Length: 415
Image 1: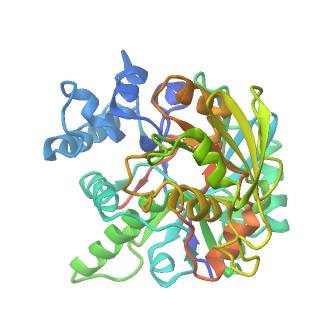
Image 2: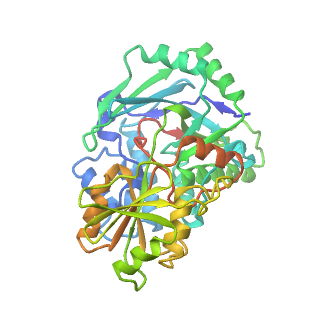
Image 3: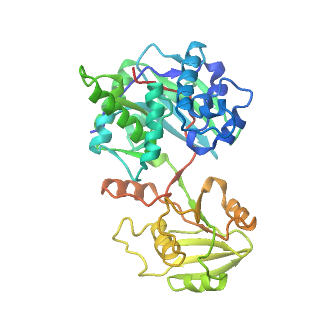
């Protein structure tokens, strides 16, 4: 059963929230963070992307950069740009994209639930990325950014959320960069706090939707603190890490597409001929073609769009991993034809979140940077939870959730 607890969130005053909040650290690079934070000393990028306070080109993993994050975090609290709530409570975080709103509960999840598999994963993590986030958690003694969980739909929680969100939110703003709306409410009544805790305690599992490296880092630092504390009791704040949990039915997974640098020595004609062995290949012309269903792909090459439909027998419907379009495309196109074996390390393939649209795939090919682009039909939440429930791991770069959580609305201190 899932264990969560309320916490005393560290938050910006209402009048400063738009100055403090930011996109997550891992959806932009140093130059983009530097540009977005320009002229704004209150931007959370000074904590989550502290290399922006150093000369351009500074190694973001240098010890002095992590230390700068801690200095800036202390400065934000000292200056009143972040203020800790007096009471342990839960929060409701709503995001609205394209007219659709999803309502998440901001909670502290239990480190042991991550370790024992109650919090289920669907992706592998890389040790270097884990260690980067672990250093950030250690130096700040806090979860600065939340992780993104899904949970089975729950009528009791839906009702509670509806009651609170009928009132005016504490925060309510629309992000200028993408036009998405973000709102926050506080669950501060004791009986409602108990309701949330008990509702989660009845759930057999929580699912990591986005933020596998942050989840791993937060849990590992919590365990590290427990192991290093001779007086460890089990109820310390470091036994928990911050997560925003959404009902699974409210979440949308969008496509996560591929762009390819070369054709492994093949001409376009040879490449298309090779594809016809396992796919029904149909030329669609110059207008953007979007995949229509599972096992249908769109290919852009040579200024033309093609529909690729996997032929029967090229995948196994009984295999929860083998039936995924990302597996089909990786095995039958990237590996078999193009000799791209490892998506995590190959420099011959790159990945484009569907939020950028298929026009971004066309742009990168037309620019000459890439030679071809492959668009996939998005994975469903049911596929994700089925894979996590069976202990399987999705291939790299399978899911893209949107909208992304804004950072800086609530922070969890570990002591």
